[in-house]
Image (cartoon, rainbow, N blue to C red; front, side):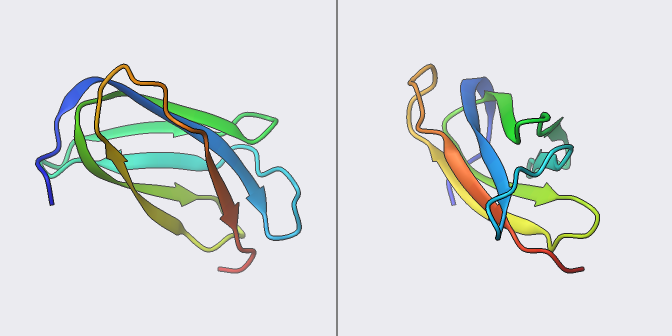
Length: 94
């Protein structure tokens, strides 16, 4: 895995449940190898964004009560490059 660093990169996307309904107020979190974190929440339309990322591979988690935790890995190759929105589907459950 590449080193994780802070920088000017940004990722964004949307969250829906497995039925297609928007998931608002889900916690979106990246935990760095040194234990520090960047956190945000999805808005009323299920949209989210996290900024302050350098080049590297990042584990991103999506959490909300009533849903299973969703984890994905995101790779940022170039800071300041426009990234494609990441569409997340969360399963109802735990």
